[in-house]
Each structure stands twice: as structure tokens, then as C-alpha cells.
Image (tube, rainbow, N blue to C red):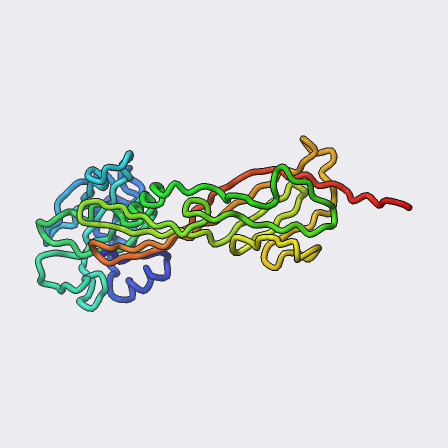
Length: 291
């Protein structure tokens, strides 16, 4: 299992558990090796230094990530650096194993998603999981073909009035609002991802915007001039003088994606995706009619 380190705070916890080590004399200082991406104390992760995990060495190696995924592109491979010295027996990096087992704990760096963590790898076994699970989660989302909001109101062909509450809502489908679920696999690892719109930000072209959590409420004639209870806007000026006599409207959806490994080492995570739609809205002035 890849134990992720997502910030400096978890790193500090790991160090407190006994992963500190001193730099060895004669080692190239970080920055002199063009293949090295960075250094976590004395542990250096090098992207192009293939090797084989061994009980005595500190060699780095790569895992070819997506050769068997069937995807159109291969993400950058994760790199693995054996921790020297090894962490204490109660450290989570052992993932149920213990010192003396035929394997070791390695630092894992996945450049495609910037994930850093630790993982136990058996001696002579596979170099590492075939791909970072989060890469598979993104691949699953790509297969969903998510698009921007399907704007139901305001209608591009409609005409609206200054000072009159406008109700905003969108049509819902798996590709425009969710939920939408898909899976992606690489070797023995399978990830399931579920995407759903968490919020929609409306920009009205008049210098104002509003963010709504949800699809909005469909207007009913019985509501009269009442404002929308969930998502709405009131224009303070007309669209006269704008291109085509209409305001340029933009609706941007933020999708929340939750993913989990359903086959392979236990792992899970979350990220967001953004999609956008554009439309136009004509806004006129109400005219008073005299007797």
C-alpha cells in the first residue's frame, strides 16, 4: 500500500517515528546530479536511475506505469528510493510486514500527481504498483466525458428585465451534473471514481457573479415575482450596448471526484474537475405605460 505524505506535517510525523538519517560523506550534494528531483533529508529520489530492490542497497528504480492499461498516453513513472536506515517496526510504512521479512520500505514519488509516500516492496518482486492509483482515477474521469452545465435558465432566446428576479437552474444528466461512475485498471490495480457537481459559479457579464450549491430550482408561474429559493440573480442594468444587445453568460461547474481502489492495495482520495458552458442573456428596461 502506498502510504501518502501530502504535506510537510506528515513528513514530520514520519521523521518523529524514526526515519531521520545523516548524509554520508562523499555523496554528491543535491543539485549536482541532474537526474535527482529532490531530497528528503538523506533520501534522494532520482528519476532515471534504474535498479533492483535489495536488502543491502539504496538503489532507485522505476515502474513502467501504463504499458498494460490500454490508455492513449503513458503517465510519468513513479520512482522508488529505499529508506536507509529502515523505519522502526511500528511504522505504518511496513504495511503489515515486519523487519526481517524479505522486502524493504521505500519512498515513492509519483511526478504525474505529485504524490509522495512510502510503500513496502518485496525483494525480487514487482518493482512497484503499475501506476499511481490517482492517475487511474483521472483516467476513469476522462472516460466519463464530463461537460459544462446544461443551462435551462436563463434561456438564450429569452428576454429578461432589470430589477426582476431571475431564477437560475440547469438540466441534470450523468455528463452535465452527475453522479457519474467509471473504473480504470492497470495490471492488478482497479480504481473506481464517482464524480458529481458540487457547485456552479455563474458570471453574468455585468460584472457580478454568484456561486450556487446544487442545480437550482425550476421556476413555477405560481411563484410570481419571488426570488429563487436556491439560485438566482437580479440584473441592475440592461444589456443595451453589449455585443448583440446581450450579456455574455458563463456557468462553471466544479465536480467533486471521490475515488477508491477496488482491486489492489487499499487506497482512496479526492480531487476536483472544472467544466464550463457559455450562453447569452438579453436584459431590457421595464417601461411604464401611462393612462
